[in-house]
Amino acid sequence: MRIWGFGLRSIKFPVIPVFLAGLALGIFIMFAGRGVFLEEAGLFDRETLYHMKYMTVDGNALFSYVLRKRIFGFLIL
Image (cartoon, rainbow, N blue to C red; front, top):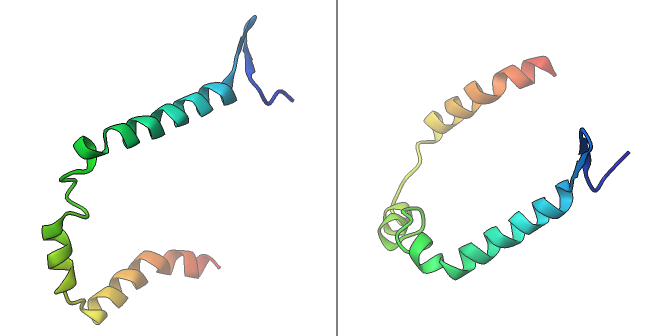
């Protein structure tokens, strides 16, 4: 079993080194450009957090939603 690559006809493609290089490049790009990418992302900006602070959750609606989503897996078990 080859871990470091798989054969494409007579060419060996290095899977793990390419994956690790892409992961490192992605992390570097996110750290270098976090001001541009994450400044007003919409998930954790000031306005969204303010609305989340004063938001209320309807327990009955949440229970019925979770029940509908999980009932099939429960019945299978």
